[in-house]
Length: 189
Image (tube, rainbow, N blue to C red):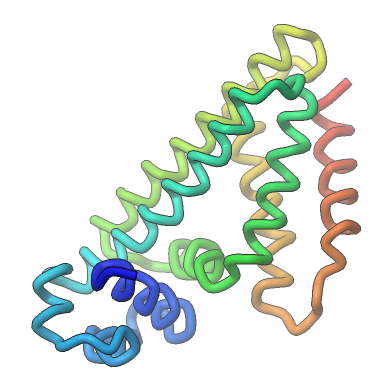
């Protein structure tokens, strides 16, 4: 792992455990086992570092959604595959998801909020396009795909947020089935 990746990994953990405002660059440098100068050489401010942490996670999520969108799955299966991916991702990357669900929903610096809003819009756009394609094949109900995509992301945030912050260990299969049923009854024919 190179220095930049070590810093990003440490920052993700520190931001997740302490919150954006409580986390310090000193804490991150210590966790990454790098000199403070090395930290600032790679990321000139806490805002820049936090912004890059969220961008890295969103890039991965967007790529996986694009993989699903351009897969051989039928549009209705694409929607269900998105749900499965989100549940698995939330469980496997709880520290990052903690940042997404809780830090970004609170008061953030305007610069970070604008970046996050743009990244969320990108994800919603990918989902919206999947839904629109499903509508053309009459496997997804006719609706405003943009609103439905944000609804889908919000539902995932609500359900998975409970498990990320709570002490309950989720039954992953049950969560996928229930979210799939809930959304598919409203979205799919």
